[in-house]
Length: 170
Image (cartoon, rainbow, N blue to C red; front, side, top):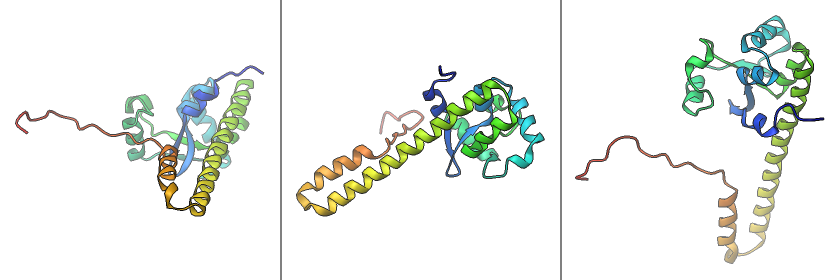
């Protein structure tokens, strides 16, 4: 089966909000080939299928944060609405309310992307545990090696540059 949407594109749309991996309603609508308002209408018509652990609406602060992180281009792109986000279970439920061939195919790809991310996170956790066990087993002479390995496993940190002008005298 040829891929409708590259997995990398789907993975880039998965965000971590309130400690959960979610996707924005507008991104899902785009992937499914429908307008965001149509997706929200279908969800409202089938509200009982979407409890809060499947879907929730972002707060103004969360939406502002997504704009500041470039996950959303601007507040205007939201069309005056605070976006809804869908957890993995909510995305699976969407396939039952958006009953088109494209929605079903894209949904399968999205489920595979969530599964791939879950496997990656689990393998990193396993690797961390194994390194800690090895660290406890060997003496201090290997501490430098384990520190380097741990720093390589850590997520990259972005150093923020200060905004403004520098005083030439200081």
